[in-house]
Length: 509
Image 1: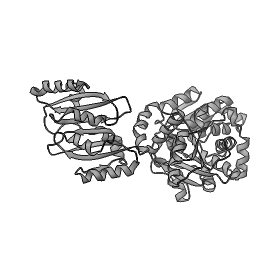
Image 2: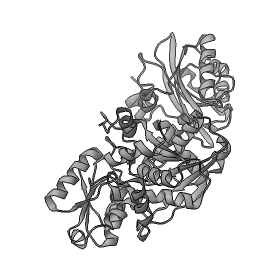
Image 3: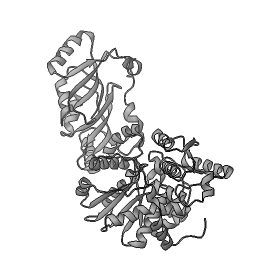
Image 4: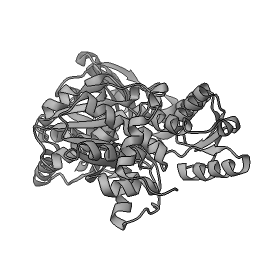
């Protein structure tokens, strides 16, 4: 890299960046619900409104706009997990040059197809950004094309800095700006501009705990390689911070905060509820950091901005986001509880919960002494309430443990509770539907009565109008008629699933 630019030189480059040949000035939206909840004025910079649904267009175009006609005649090459790729593809098309985009094989299909639609040639290589990046650099050397760095470049950083220029034009009263960090180009550009123009504004970098490369570099005093990076927030899944972004971050970024996957999911939900926009995980990263940092630092009655950096979300990933967001907001807790293996124990256990809404209930008969159940609870007061509930359960003879921070439990075990019983049972399997409302599950268990032993139970609250339960009962043939008559009296919609092939394949002897 050439001699290092000063802050004033970066300011000049940002002011002169021709990004609006392709990029647009994006809205700065007020998040009214979140503002009321946190007693701050919380604003969202909507970079998802760019033509490629991400801020990356700014830096990519600013870099390509500096190329000579000779360089444009040969073409450009880059590596990206998706958003930079789309920015380069559109920018190259606008400047009349070809673009080869190297993307990790893990890149969501929506991003791959978007790059192709914008005219880029996609090469899938490696399982991480770093592997794709090395391959792109090799192609640059062998074919003579100009490599367009995704973040570690002065022109790219200056292009990203135009986000901060717009912020100050749109809202003068700013106290904190929260910026997502992957390779560091955005946070570097935003920080240097704000500190040159408004040094009183605090710039906070936000990283995923699974890819906190800038935090690691600041701790070490130099860029370092992370041992591994998580791919959930794929747009920031970078193993090593850029050299120039690190230099600028050291001088201009005030603080850093890292957030968990669950906290990111909660931020995706917050954005949707306030704007009806669906952010990609890395796009919601800054808001997750804003929520966490403002709570930790007890920030009140201030003007806070989070940059929504992108909305190129893999639609099928929303299932995961929906499952985890309640845990991220501490509105749900999950735990393992041991209860006696006897008739009526489910109902008695629900009564001990004191009317709390149950979000999940998984059980499979194991032996005649005790049963381990997997339980989810709706929380009003977060971890404090869950801790109190666990202590109360233990006092009343129900051994319990908190699983809310156990990644194995959340990713896998909650779906695996059950399997085949350890001994043959006279079992019948039924599915039920009942109107969903507070206390509905407890009422359902109470109306079933205690004449038949429950051998399998699965319930999950999905926010729908009707709750769905799968339950097994120890039911000898001679009692089947009485059981059905009892169900008819209850009035619940039910179906005998005993002959369902999946039941016979996975859940019975």
